[in-house]
Amino acid sequence: QVQLVESGGGLVQAGGSLRLSCAASGSPFSINAMGWYRQAPGKQRELVATITRGGSTSYADSVKGRFTISRDYARNTVYLQMNSLKPEDTAVYYCNAGILVVGGFGSYWGQGTQVTVSS
Image (cartoon, rainbow, N blue to C red; front, side, top):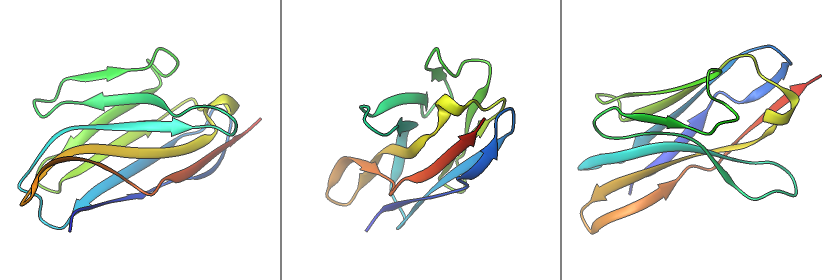
């Protein structure tokens, strides 16, 4: 069974950096687009960044120039490098991936990792 396992969250001061990782386990046949979303308390989940199978990236306006998404195809892993963090970046961060498995294609989510930025 394919799972997405996230790591790298934590507490950091404003202006600091964190790197999130999300690895797909369970030997997926192939992985299409991968992305990161976040959900702050009392707010809807929002898209942060995506990266296609071909490596094209896109970002929310609020993180452009500060966050960088990348992926390691050999390790089935997506990363989110977060620099110049702001208190408003505080949220639970979730990774998402479109994955082809034995039963077909599906959208998978990680369990979420907390990022807290103190002022």
